[in-house]
Image (cartoon, rainbow, N blue to C red; front, side, top):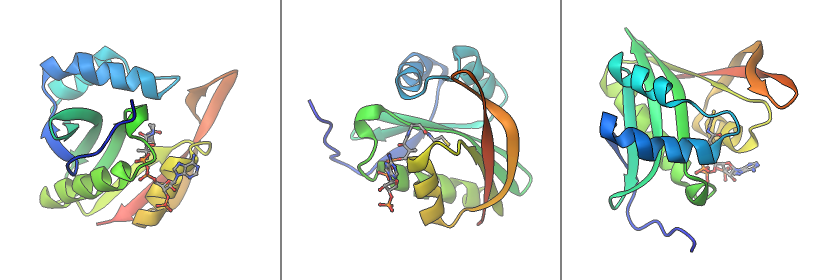
Length: 153
Ligand SMILES: CC(C)(COP(=O)(O)OP(=O)(O)OC[C@H]1O[C@@H](n2cnc3c(N)ncnc32)[C@H](O)[C@@H]1OP(=O)(O)O)[C@@H](O)C(=O)NCCC(=O)NCCS
């Protein structure tokens, strides 16, 4: 069954009891997913962690770290059945609002050079590449670089 987006995605704070469902989406979306401990640690450390819901349905999640006036997007994930239909843009718009509302003036993120959809999304939002971290990500048969991108808020 194909997913139908009834309502615009909303962000809700991620709670410990959400982690099972979040982890299921995470594992379906990446070959090298975050672990349960990664999410639990993020919540315990007070990172900004969100569940993205459309009419109550969990469609994805995001984790952001805010330090003074700099925000760092650490995780942005949509369930595969919700990808490629414009939800990413809507979720990012809400994340940018959250960051701005908390006083962030710049948002940083890393993205794989092989991740065309994510790069298209970030480019359209105005993110610019400001650097490259060599061998940052695990990859099949080795490591993959990360492109470091930033947006002035
Ligand atoms: C990356 C992600 C958040 C993007 O969200 P999305 O809702 O799927 O993306 P959208 O439908 O809003 O499309 C964003 C843009 O990417 C383009 N795009 C989508 N799939 C693409 C592909 N395979 N190759 C190139 N461009 C693609 C779309 O055309 C759109 O561009 P446009 O605005 O110029 O039309 C989502 O696909 C996802 O969660 N992927 C898996 C996890 C991931 O990679 N997270 C990001 C880690 S940095």
